[in-house]
Length: 237
Image 1 (cartoon, rainbow, N blue to C red):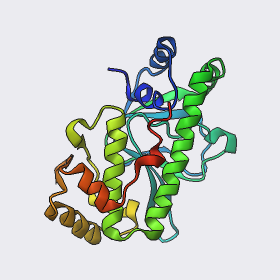
Image 2: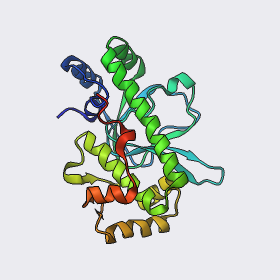
Image 3: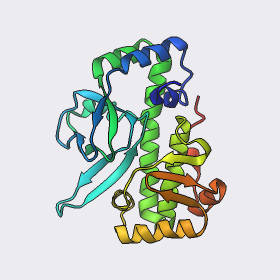
């Protein structure tokens, strides 16, 4: 089965077998990274492009009072910092949320590969634009959606994104996040998150045991969350 990066990018452009093989060759020797480890800290200059192959990572900011705001989840197939080098240094941190498998891709090799192949260049720009679209949707969620819709919307999104790379068969997926991680993502307290998750269970919409999340009623959960997947642009190719 193609690695998650290839599967993801094929939603943005039709890649030839040669282009797929070149991407596969570029992704070698992934490194195991423990949970809650910085891949790159705020203020650092990125030297590599970080690719998540397994596990969950995030973009985050630490406020002056020490609290954390998670601004995006980075899932298998996601390139964490593709164009950040244009800015010189990071204005946020990127860290693992769970034990993860991360590839450190040589930036110059990836850029050279894309410059010679327009389809691959299109796919990489598509991935960047989708990241921006997800950020906009999270802003709407944080600003306007009530707490129960925030949590439900995040579950809907993660199912769609994992399914797009073949990692949510039957709406069952590995979901090893803690309720504290959910709280820092949704701008809620862990106690409030616990109540919202229990509400979704009581409604018969999800089952979440240990690190396995199952969406029991996909259509009903998306309706409950007011979820429209158009911002994920999964049919762009």
